[in-house]
Length: 252
Image (cartoon, rainbow, N blue to C red; front, side):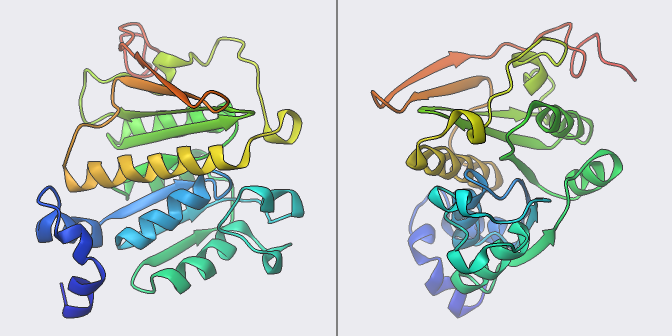
């Protein structure tokens, strides 16, 4: 770490749980953020500010006016621009030492697997179950920790699914893919703007803790936030022994 980095990250380094060794882990880390919208925006801002060395932003969408109410990475001048590229421009202004890789596409199949295989942590900041389950399968296959968040209306949730530990539950244990789960999107249901910031920032915090190796992650727990009452609930997520992804029901 050079002198400029020692100064920039000095408030992190002062924390004994992080110190120089922990900050160096952040600087050498590679993180994938899937979805550069309401959750991905604050998550990416804090990951870059905290010193993540390489940040991969994946999103096949472009910025439109309805995004600006909550997607704080983008600006009026970003309208019509690819979200990943808009994010890269903004993050370069905040921390030019963070190398931002842009993927202006919806990651699927082999492309998703390739990106997951080459990072330290994955943040799922998407808004649909098909993509969430695909990310979960890839993270399980390549034993990558997954930080999953969601926000709709006034309700938010966040958890960590850490495939490095064989006894850890996966996303499929919580929301089995075969079940009929109502798909709720911001474009139809609405979302309270600050809620996405709260959940997205917590996703960044969990990812940073995992990379540094400090504290206790949310693996095995689901945090639920009621934004109207500002009350949190924590529920345990047991691993399903018959899970089709991580249990005895998994296909080889």
